Structures are given as C-alpha cells and as structure tokens.
Length: 193
Image (cartoon, rainbow, N blue to C red):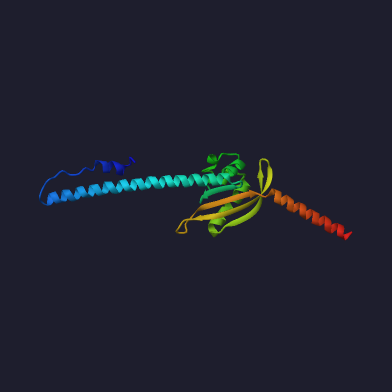
C-alpha cells in the first residue's frame, strides 16, 4: 500500500551514530525499533491483503448465491435503503440490482405498498423478531401472491443494523387452495340436494 503510514515508514532510516556512550546506545535502540516497526508493518500489510482477498471471495459467493435464488432477496439498512438485492427482486421492480441499491421502498414501489413494507421493517427492527406474511402485490404484469420472510440484522452487541428479507411467488398455491375450496363448497351444496 501507498498509504500515509507506509510513506512514513519508508522515510524512517536507521541513524548512523557510532558512539560508545548513551547516545550510541539510544541510536542502536532506535534502529532496532525502526526494524521491528518495518517488519511488523510488512506482516500486517500482508495479513490485511490476505483478509481482503478472502472477504472479496466470500462476497462473490454470497452474491452468486442470492442471485441464483428463484425468490426475491434483499438487505436494507435501518433507514430502509436497499444495501443489496438479488436479480429476481430487481427484475420485479424493473431495475438492475445496482440501480436498486441506495433506494428506499418509496423509490421503487407504489406509495401504499412502500408504506406497508416500511411499517413491516420497523416492526421487525423494533421487535427484533422475524416476521412472515402472505400478501398480494400489484406488479406491472398483474397481481401476485407473495409469501414474505423478514428478519432483523443484529450486530454482536445487539445493535440493529437493518433487515433482510426473502419473498416467493405463491400465486399457484393460492389458486389451488381457492379451487379446492370451491370444490368443497360445491360438494357440500350437492350433498344437501
């Protein structure tokens, strides 16, 4: 790295003082500290680079995982701004995943729906508990039933960092339930004849 600490360390040069007294001892001690400091910084710099590469790889795996999910997935901060969304969620909003990042529900969805989503997020963050719900969502292609799971994200010390959520289209299941209910009602009607 070429950060300010690195530049300072490069400028630190051993003192060339050959003296048999306290000044010479001080110079030798100073030179020893410079060497130790430069070695420590080099070791630290390598550890930071290795950890950064490891975190980038983990981020790539997580990005691939959420993008391959057939359901919608998202991460939001405490203000309700999207930190990340998968392709399925972005496609439903008609935007790219990168275009959704930084936006709120009010930037992406109709006002009433955005208000409901924000209320759910606030409930999840306040209660610090997961919430599951089934709801109809109006999309450009028509209404669909969604089963949504939301949960708070908590730091090690319990601080709420935001929310995560996934939602899946359950319209086919709802249609099958409605059809089954209609058949039962018709069967009961026929049984009374």
